[in-house]
Each structure stands twice: as structure tokens, then as C-alpha cells.
Length: 273
Length: 282
Image (cartoon, each protein chain N blue to C red):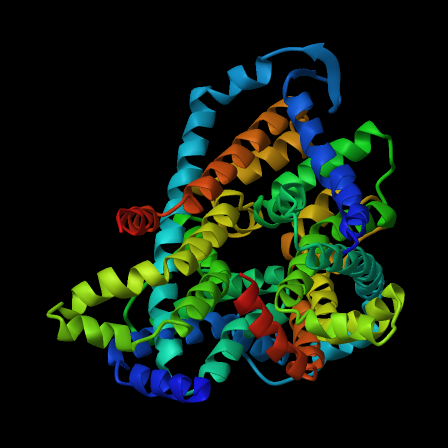
């Protein structure tokens, strides 16, 4: 019945297909993908001008054999992404299970502190953290970056897992309890395995956010704690080299391999916002 | 049943220390006097707030508001059309994947790619010169339009997704019903489709306007004198001019505008009130 209804909906909607909106969509997709094409094209360019002269692997050679600083920055970024991702996934999942199981009362405080970091401009989060760290005289290094990244990743993980908890079928936990499982067993053997995909998605989301962040990191990083976006920024500001293009295409390739994960990510993003 | 509230405590404590507390610090800092070499002196003063209302700062605030509004209108209109087209196409997953594909690359690199497309010796100018549409290269970068273009580019995917998920769950037979009942196509879209996807539209307005209003990187990299925004002002006050109270005050202004925006967007929509009234009347 349900499925039938859905099919009818689907048939109905295609009647409304129209040329105008479809053209705009195609133009927008090209608009969104144009920079990616340029990145890929220029990574194989011989000269370092923004005109394509001839094909060469020069910049890839440069990337793999002559970019120590870049790989140091990449290592820093990955370290931060994984540690901050793990920390925010742990705290966020715990909290999401907490609110999910606690159906009687809804905490406005939890809603507020998970919603605000999500919507406030990044500059604000960066400024407030740098003022805070300077007040408690914490010197800026990888640790402060870790704290900052955990802060802004947490709401994303929490909301991802929490939206899964909302659709959780609590009759199975009751069944587990009836069959003699303890509370801890119910949690580790029933609840966590059931929501595992959303925890995983939250973790991936956190890693992506962390690797991507420039503004907040810009504030809370100190000497010797350059992350990849900071390094890229310095390249863009002071002497552009197409090495970044080569690196980007390399990253695109690596990430495309996990495209199946991306698909899930898309759906979660679409449903969580 | 046991109360599981304590599971939320670790997160609440962490965010209270590293998110709320720093925000409270910003409030305090905005009411202090600036230190000679950055930081603040513990003296209460309204200096920062007096400075906010200087003419040059007023211009920057207004400019930021205008640019953010323009970018939001363009982005959301495009997002509406795209989301509508995706919802009706047979290849939803394909289009959605294409739209989030840019997320695979760092945003700085994508801005850099745009810079090499738009620069005076860039791809676009070369193309136009070759075709013969223009005889001298246009200066497309480092101005207001470049900032708006890049903003639209950056926020469009974020704007499409919420509207798409709203349209996707919309029952299109309702539109036909409205036509049967004598509504024109336009009326159907305005009075049937729009109200039911309003939440999606609101979310995408929010997720475009707030980052645009607090933008820093975009205007720094592709903006010029006519597009120096509040975000740049705040960062420069921290890193160059070293006037922390002023940076704090402007940050509060930004926060306040964002919160007002959120409250306005998520206020109870008028039609919900109306339908409540009708139900009561029954």
C-alpha cells in the first residue's frame, strides 16, 4: 500500500518536468564543477601560467619529491582530523544516545549549544576561542587546534546520530530487556550496533569538516602547527604554484574511491538539514 | 524507566567550556579598554561601541549586509529551481552526487581555481579575446561582483539540499488538485507548493545568509576595496590593528544579527497560526 502510494507520487511528479528548470540545473551543475575541471586540467599543465600550454607531469613530480612542508602540513591535518573526529564522535554519540533514550524531557540547553555553533559565522567561533585561550594563557599549538576542531565537529556528529535515534524502534530494546539483557548489554549489543551507520557517517562528516576548516584553525594555530588549509592559503597569498592543483587532483582521486560512503553522506546531509 | 540524561553531560560540559564560555569572554572583552599590544586592559569602557557607529564602520556594516542579501537572493532562487528540477528528474542520485562533488576539494583550492579562471590573463578572458567579443581583457577579479559570484558558488550546494529534501517529500498530486479546483499554475505554486516547502527554503536562506554575512576568506581572496566586509574588519582588528575590544564588539554584532535571523526564520509561520485558529473554531 505504502509502496503503491509512493509510486503514484513518483509518476505524478514527472508530469511536471519542465525545460526551464532543467536548463538552469544543468548550467548550475557546470558552474559548480567548472573549478574542478580547471584544477585537473592545470595540474597537467607545463607552465605555471593560467593558460594551458602542453601536457606534463612536472607538478606531480614536484608534489611527491619536492614538497616536504606540504606533507608535514598534511600529516598535521590528518592527525587533527582523526583525533578531533574520534573525540567528537565519542562525545556526540554518547549525548545523542542520552537524548534519544530520554524521551520524557527535552533539554533546551543541549539544543541551544548544539545548534548555535552550527549557525554562527566561523569567524565568531575563531575569535572567541583565541580570546579564551589567550585569557587562560594556553599557548597556541596542535592541542588548541584539536580543542577547536572537536568543538565545531561535535554538533554535526550529535545531530547526525540523534536524527537516527529519533527513528529508533524502542520495542527491540524492550525485547532485549525481557530476554534478560542488562542495561549495559542492551546499550552495547542492541543500540550501538543498530545506530552504527550513523555513528560512522558522523565520524566521516567530522573528519571532512576538520580537514576543510581554514578560518577557525587560522586563529588557534601557533608556530609549527600549520595544517593543510593554512599551508594552501599561504601558497595562494604568496606565490601560487600549481603543486596545489596536483595535490587536489590526488585528493579527489583518493576520496572518489570512497564514493559509496559519500552517497550515504549526501542522504544524511539532505535529511539532517 | 531510568533517566539517561547524564549521557549528555560530557558533551554539554565540553561545549560549555569551549563554546559558551569563550562567547561570554567576547561579551566581556567588548566592554574593556584596548591593550597597547593587543589583548585588553581591565577597565570598563564603552569605547568599542562608540567606535562601531563611526561613519566608516557603518559603511562596512551596510555593505556587508547588502552583499550578503544579494548573494542569498541569487543563491536561494537558483537553489529553488535546481531543487525542483532534481526532485522531478529520473536521476536524482546522480545530480545530488554532482552537486556535492565540489566538497571533495578544499574550498580554498576551489577559490584559487576561480581566481585562475577570472584573472586578467585567465581562462575566461583568453576565451573571450579569442572569440573576439572583447578587445581588452576585463578585470573580473578583486571587486564586489567577484565576491558575490564566489559566494553563490560556495553556498549553492548547501542551499539546494534542504530545499530538495522538502520538495522530494511533497505530494505533486496536490498541485494537480489545485489546478482542478481552478487555480492557475502560478497560484498553485505560490499557495500550495511554497507553503509546504517553506521550512526547507528557510533553512537554505539561513545557511546562505549567515556564512555570507560572516564571510572572511572569500572577500580576502577575490574582493577589492569595494568589498571589504565585517569578517575582514574583525580579523584585521585582531591580527593587525590589535584592537580586541572593537573586534569583540563587531563579533557580537555579527552574532546578534545571526541570532535575530535564526529567530525570524524559525518563528511560527502565519499559516500555522491560522490553521490552529480554524481547528479551535471547529
